[in-house]
Length: 167
Ligand code: FES
Image 1: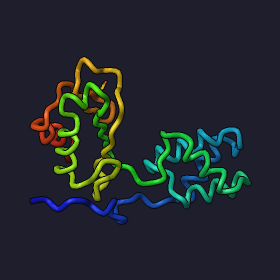
Image 2: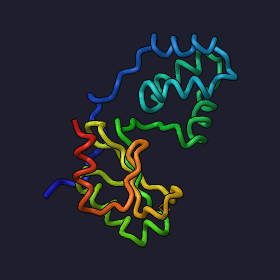
Image 3: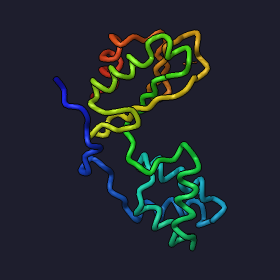
Image 4: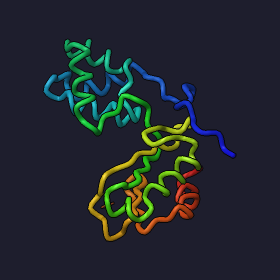
């Protein structure tokens, strides 16, 4: 039986912040405070989350309080303050998907990945999340990996879906 659950990403797998890279991003937006969201988007794209070290560099450079950056980072759902996996799995638990075994599919992903929903595997390969209705109820139950939709999913499909994304 697999051990549940991972205690989070392995620190050695997390990309280190290079101040020069953050400076390059700031430079590309001409150090403009009104470009803050785009600067954060680029940092998120580079590291797949917003590392505190990078936020401190941005706050110093733009002469903004760090707390203001955290406010922005927590306001928008697209930003994450925790390292994210290379692939993002979203299991729909909206009504239609819930009624068609969505929770069993989620359990199957949790078991296979040894993480709970809302968590990232220790190798930073996957982040597992749930969503509420993605507008594809006719295909329920739905799983989305990155931008690919898997309709009419079954717990028995989970291993096969993961295999496509494992190295
Ligand atoms: S409830 Fe899952 S797509 Fe609508």
